[in-house]
Length: 136
Figure 1: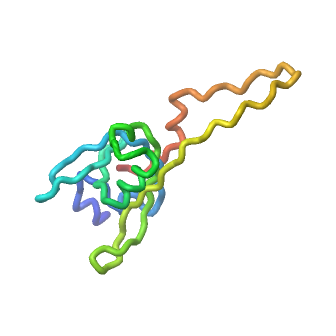
Figure 2 (figure 1 turned 120 degrees about the vertical axis):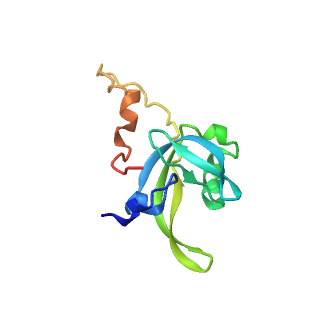
Figure 3 (figure 1 turned 45 degrees about the vertical axis):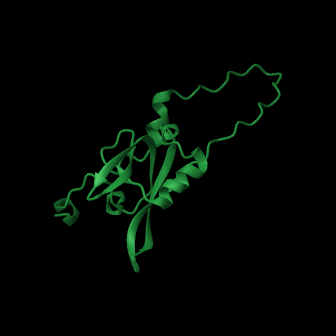
């Protein structure tokens, strides 16, 4: 038995990543009560569990896409496990890395040959390389 399955959680834990990175698309941010505190929860497209945002992860995302969480929807981030200091102890945590938007390069000058352009990626193929084998 996996001992972590004995303690299910509505929120993502470092152990849910199984030691691997996970590329995800941001779905929404909601404010929820956890104990006596109101906390921002980051939910992902196609995933059930949300990530309780701490200041470090929230600032990492806001540094790229601004502080308005409504503009974060559909943006890609990578979740990765990390060991961090918390209340004087080293603990497992989740950190986020922002996938920088790709800047468009100017199109090359047209060639004299009349070759067919490469096929455009379909919207369905975008998520094909997302790490879906991590079950959260």
